[in-house]
Image 1 (cartoon, rainbow, N blue to C red):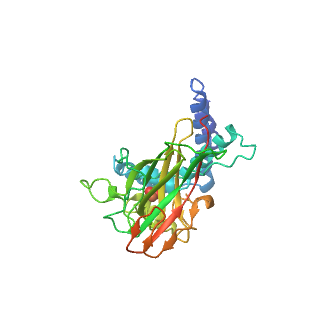
Image 2 (cartoon, rainbow, N blue to C red):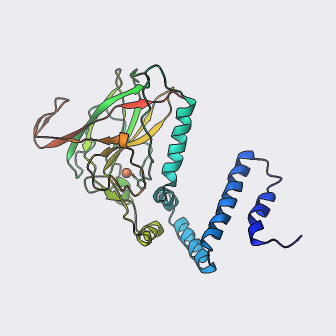
Image 3 (cartoon, helix red, strand yellow):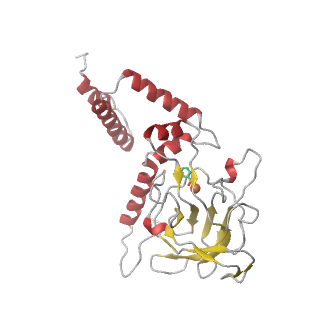
Length: 297
Ligand code: BEZ
Ligand code: FE
């Protein structure tokens, strides 16, 4: 039978994969085809709308290079990146059953496009905020396993935008790294460093995804946050942020990355001696957060 009716098209596409040798790929493509066809049926998509969608995806692809990844931004703003993170973390938690008073792991969130491999390795206590706009902030805490045992020499990559919400990568082609570093926890699992208190900022909205957000009636902003990526032998890598409590947009993050357990009170301090002995001649903030890592699968 040569002719296929509209309602049979999805199954016909799936049937053509009879010779596919990769079970997982076949499963993913089968579901994708079925959901895509159901979506087109659901909204009764017109040829003009389908062409608009194709032009949008083409423009999105054209805005991707080593500095800009519009497709990841699309995934982020549609909540898909965060869904994938949540599924992955649930899978990890299911593989490792906490018990005997063990604590829950620190929650993960999106990585975002501004991670830059190869940030300088600095001594604990170093100030990566000096020379950048923004109010100084002292970050400190401890990294442990789920039983509370300290994890020594855990790599802690940190990065953020400046006090006006701009990342180094957004400041032009020849601007070097700023507001990012790698630290290692000490023998007791402690970390500490100085940076700035991050402010809210818009995700890049001068491309097709920005246009989509405007048509959807959405703002492009993320609440203030410090990115952190932790990695220690014998433990799963954790990519997360700590969020500034009371930051604008804490309840409407454009990429849906906020987790309640990652919201931190950034305490305000008058000038004087900080917890690490540094004497501050202007007001500053401090943020305390302890991380719990899952054992490697
Ligand atoms: C970020 O937090 O750096 C970010 C995350 C997703 C999209 C854009 C930026
Ligand atoms: Fe960010």
